[in-house]
Length: 124
Image 1: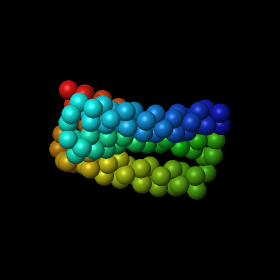
Image 2: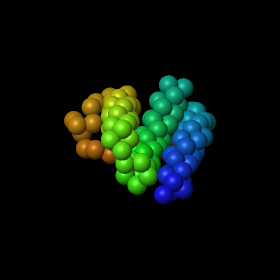
Image 3: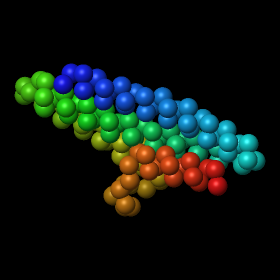
């Protein structure tokens, strides 16, 4: 299971790296289409923010797998709880930053949906 956990962690990091590159490409395309720099910047933030949210979801899954299958002590469960709490607060704050409203005031969406919507808006 350790290999599975490492695979999940690697995918989480890969999502971050690809998300950063994708956000930069989309922002440059927005600029090339003659839109103002603030639109390109907002698009970059939204696309990359969506990638961060998606990455956090995968990394929480990795921590969950590690705790449930590898190290099932009370200490590891407590650490997992704290990690999930911190990442949840971070996810909520990122969603509020990106969308401008708390997630519970609109339909819940994943990080991938946020990045896709920002890309679509930026390129239209």
